[in-house]
Image (cartoon, rainbow, N blue to C red; front, side, top):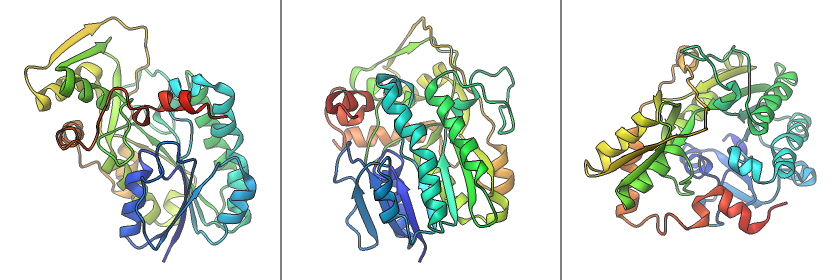
Length: 326
């Protein structure tokens, strides 16, 4: 039985990934602050959950030994959340990273997988942005993601397999839901307000269904060490404009949904190629943005998600504001 240590395992992606790993027979240890709820993960004999901070190296030293794989998901996610408290963001997203890598290395972890971001590229003119292109991050959040990639790569060896994933924006339903990501935001407004506000609209936003995101991590975990060591993989479904995303949402939720366009100063536009992970690992996405919208629609209809505009647990920045995390 493989043992895997996951930071941030009670987050949006982790809440779907951990049950899948348990189903596949892994022994999983999750370290998470649990600020978005403490009953997100299942009760399972092969799951150990630790409510704690990745900045606590004593906690890492105590719990990492015996694990073969470390999957590092924990971070202050996305630019607005990061900018709410930049010093907090730096301490978690950058300063805590190298100590985590060192503890992993010292305790004979064989593989370290890092969740970076496709935002590290910044704005590119090229149609397909590939993993070997220069990083031109526009924000500290993105810059620190890139910095961590370099730190991790400097520690790689035949006995310490390092892999970085650069996800597109994740969408769809999860046990720990986020409604502050573009497709999820649009779907929430379409379903309840029958109106979508699109700021700008021509910006490209690559998205990836949460199930595909999970499967990409599994593909890396299952891969032969020599083909993923030191590698970086983009993971995304398709590069669509915000207008196209809004249109997809409307087609699922209902033709009565009104789309209102307004001007925007947000010039961020991402268009990434996911050909490398397809060519090397044979991984291709199976789900579309419309699938994610359908999943959310189903969750809304079944009241799996309630008070969807005001519940702080669905919005990172609201929750962080309220708990005053330091």
